[in-house]
Image (cartoon, rainbow, N blue to C red; front, side):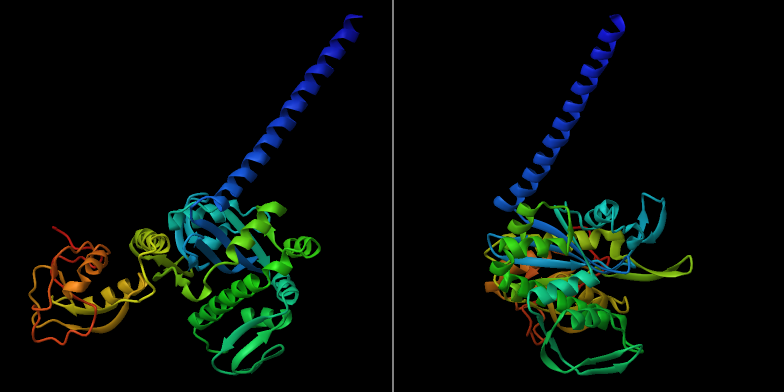
Length: 390
């Protein structure tokens, strides 16, 4: 009798533990689903990681930041060769070393840390499945500036002009390499395709929400979303104003490490996080118009190449550099910005990028032709990233 009671108690205890475990798993599932859903219903930026997988390696990695209230978006292209101190393996290596199609959390976390954001949604598309989606949405239109006619293992042929790619052509367009082609050309080609792909998904959104089509569509993606959240996300993204998207690649300096060439982000990654923060301000603040402000950069020091390097820095923040040169002398102690009185507020926002708070009127530099919205004169207090001693 005692043995029977003991077995019954053990069975009852096991059953209670099992029910508790099921309850916890269910609660966590509902909580995570609700948290993801909340990011789509609130007044907040949506962060989505897209990876195009080619043979188990990221061909392209994009982080899409979208603010539904203004319908503005920014995209950051994360090079796989980006060199970082990878904490999980305690060494310097490529960021895509962490990529795993089945368990992508480490790669996602490193990308989020790099940009200084929290990624809510992730979408992985194998090249094969991307082609299936392209066929499902009846092709993607891309503009090809120069015709391509190359024989490799197979014929690569694309006419110039606006061309609609089917699934097979899209896969080839993303993956082909021309002999002697600059790697940046391939990066820009894939960026153009991704923007066109997003546009087409938006155009076909109503068709893709059809229950019969929706499950097939979702089956071509590996995501961290359930069916309901997946549909809501892509419905929300369909309202992006594609023509206003700011697409940027994470830049840096090339270095040889352990026999491979790695791209190390400028200023140990602090620059790209500053660019992300500025991009988020532009997405959220509806007072920003679509105008791209022009800048003239003048070197007022004896440091060779300072104006050119500063111009590249400012381009990363979306400014149009129309002139680079030397100031009227090379002994300026302080960095300052010259602008018109009507542009003073904009000039102050521009100056915050490099922490320059000395804003002057057009009466300065009287011998210079002031064609730009802002003329930046670099002084000795500029350390190639910030003005010091303000």
